[in-house]
Length: 430
Image 1: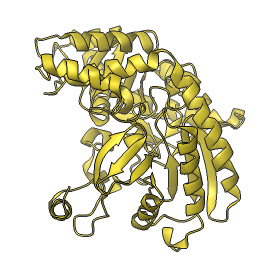
Image 2: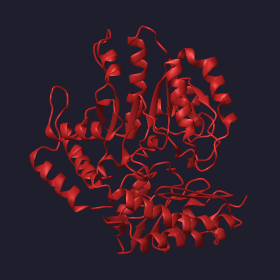
Image 3: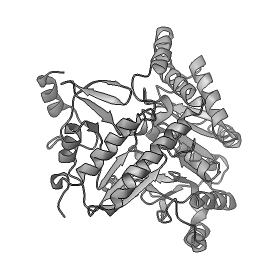
Image 4: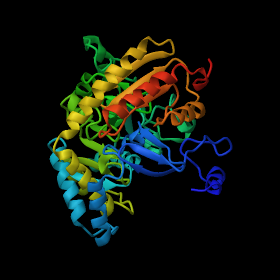
């Protein structure tokens, strides 16, 4: 990349959550391999973000590359309307066999946000097909489910990046965010407000949607598994569908294959994405029960009314199959456990630092919550200067490294996070 490329970037290319008039700095990456990103000047950065949860095997993995090269020589894309192809069949077989029993109907799509849109549409069309239309979705405050229209409508309406759109979005209902932490003892009174809410408002609720255990963009909060069991029970009692958004947490990130496994519950609809392809391409899957798919299919519409152009893209399916093959031998369990051990030993002591409000670790996720917002531009520059790629937001510095990261590289990430706390220029003064 040349300097004029960077100038063009600054003038014309709109980056996520970034102003065009006051853009944040961008760093030119020319290659990536293993757990490292290489800048155009030759510097290598240890990746602490897995490219937003996705690159669990790191970058340029030979097995995934080989699978994609073989597939691209046969067929990189074909429409999915009226056509089936081997990579899609293999992937759906794998997903049915590795997710909770009963989730046997698979809808493949482009991205995590689209998977959520599909799940919401499934729930709404299901109740319409039953002749008892329900129009509301129940979600959790401090939740986040994506940036598309329907997904924004089930994100926190007041304390999220999408609050500016709330007057233009469909009206839904919201439960208070869980307060009992993952590692705390469950108290009997914790469920009282949930019982009352469901009793009073269930009549028009088509589905509950939530991020199991980990509320990501809403604050990187880890809540108690009993909330999932409670909501599963209430959904059963009041005949409400349960949608689990495992876009970020699926495929081992929390220490379980799915975050729902922490509570041993099965959702009615399951959304997967991000790490599905090992971060190689964009792909998502929405799974549901046969009786839900049949009810929709036997309705007046006669089918589920959704069909993305790049649905079940063969190249993406091939990447996903290779990624799942890498995970099949269960080595991910040991990798995540080792990462968790080091995050606990390295980050937990930071809770005594005057700038730190809280430290949280679950599986291969480590979070340092600061008492004041970070100066994103400054701290990002500081991290790059010290050889790591970490992308904080608001007052959160968090690590979600690739599963294949070495112990030495992980300790470097932890050390740099620790040292960053003593640089006052990295934070916005209160």
